[in-house]
Image (cartoon, rainbow, N blue to C red; front, top):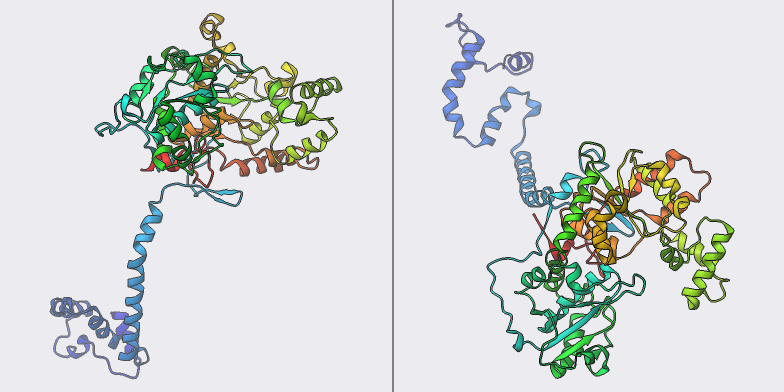
Length: 552
C-alpha cells in the first residue's frame, strides 16, 4: 500500500490516505499502524460484501484512467461466468480422460497406444497397461443354473476335434459354445488322429476331464460317452444320416438355430463335421464368446503331471545363471513342413532348393503345378510378410531390440529345416539357447513321449509362463499363447515381429545398423501384446479383450 500511495501522490488527484489526514493530530502514527487499524475496522464489514464490491473498492488506488465503467464490468463478469460454466462442464470429460483405461487403437494399419512416463523395459509391458483390465470370464459362484436335466435337452451333439493340440483346443471351446446355443448335451469330444503327427491321444490323456465337466456344469450338459440307449455307435462316425456336413466356416449362432437344431431334435444324436473354425466371433452373442473364454482359460486344464513337469522346466529356465533371471521363449516355426507349405524362397544350396521343389510337388501338386509361377509368388509373399522368419533373421531382430548375448532363450520348435547349420547364426548370437530335451533328462520326458500332444503341452505351458514370448510365424499355438498372456494381465511381453517391414529392411543393402535398430524399436513398441481394441472379424483367441475382460 505504501507504493500505491506514493504513486498516487504524484498524480493529479489528492491523496485519500488515512495517514495524510491524521498527520497533524497523530505525528507518531506510522504508515503500517495506520493501515492495520484501517484493515481491522473494515475487515469484518468487507468479508460479507460480494467480491465485485470489494473489487470496485480497490479502484480508487489506481489512476483515473484505469477506472472500469459499469457496462464493461458487467461484460467482464458475464465472460467470467461463461468461462466458469465451461470449466465446470469439462470436468466430467477431463475426469474420464484421466481415468480412461489403457487401450491401443488402430488408425489404418498403425496401432496408436497411450503415452506412458515409464522407461521402456526389455522384459515387461508398461505398468499402466496392466492395471486397466482384468479377466472376467471365470465361473461365478452363487448364480442359479437354468440348465434342464440331460434327458430334457434338445438332443446330443458330437464332434471330432481335428489337427494338432491347439486346433483341437479351439474346436473344444467352439463345441461347448454350440451346445449352449442349441441347448444341447455335448458328448465329450474325440481328439481325431492327426495326419502329420500320427498321434492317438484321447481327451483324458491330455486334459483333466473331471475339472472340465464340473467347471461347466452350470453352462452346458457334458457327458463322457455316447448314451447307452444308442446302440449303433459306429453309425455316429460313418452314417451320413447322423452327420451335419454343411456348416460354413465362421457360421453365426442363428445358422445353428435355423439349420442344425432341427436335425438334432429329429435324430436326437448328431455328429458335426468338419468342425474346424465352424463358429464366428462377431456374429454370436457376447455371452457365447465369454463362455468360449471360460472354457479356454478356466475349464481346459492339462493333467497334473503335465502341469508339474512344465513348472519344473520354467523353474530351471529362471535359475540357469545361478540366481533368478528372466527368460524368453521363442516359437520357431521353421520345420520342413512349414517351409514347404509357405511356398517362400529361402537361402540355401542348389541341392536344398531342388529337394524342396520335389517335396512341394509331391505334397501339394495342385498348388505346385509346373513350378513356373512359384518365384513370383515367393517374392510377393515375402513383401507381404507372409513367410516364416529364418533363425538368423530372428537373431538380428532380437539383437536390434536390445536383448544381450546372455539372454536365456527356450526354443519351442519341431525339427528345424536345415538342422544345426540353419540354427548356427541364432546360436552364435544367443548361445544360452535350450530346448526341453536339453533342460530335462531322457527319463523325465519318456513318460510324455507316448503322446506327441503331451510334449506340445509342455512347450505351451513353458511359453505361457515366460517373461517374453516371441513368435516367428502365425498359427494357433502363437495365437492362443498371446491371447492367454493378454488375459492374464498384459504384463508379459508377447512380441509379434512385423515381417513385412523386416523383409524390406533385410533387402535394403544401403541401410546401416543404427537405422535398422531405430526402425525395429519404433515398429515394435506397440507389438508386444498390449491392450488393443477389437474390430470386426477379430480373432477371439489372440485378443480376448472386449468379451472376456472388464475395466478395473
